[in-house]
Image 1 (cartoon, rainbow, N blue to C red):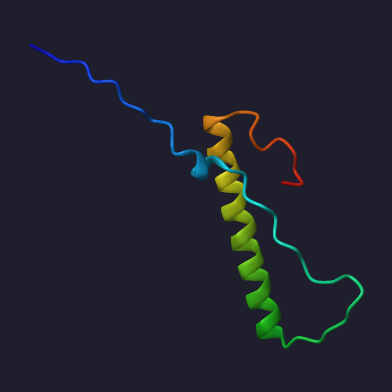
Image 2 (image 1 turned 90 degrees about the vertical axis):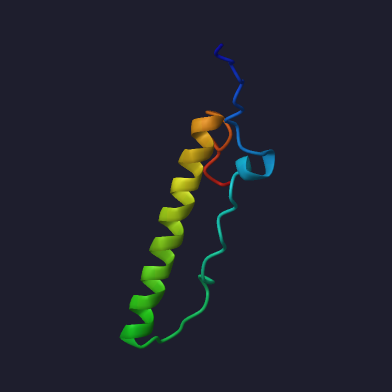
Length: 72
């Protein structure tokens, strides 16, 4: 005889918190970076942005209104 088992597919609440945006570099400061360091910084910042965007989309899939404020 088949048995139906309810599956909970909602992640724990701590995984559904909107990730904070990291603070950027100060706007009133100047620095000189070698090209390789600048390129690495851009790669890391782009990867962080992409991962944060993906996480926000995943959270939104579970709770459509969770991360509506872009400042979060």
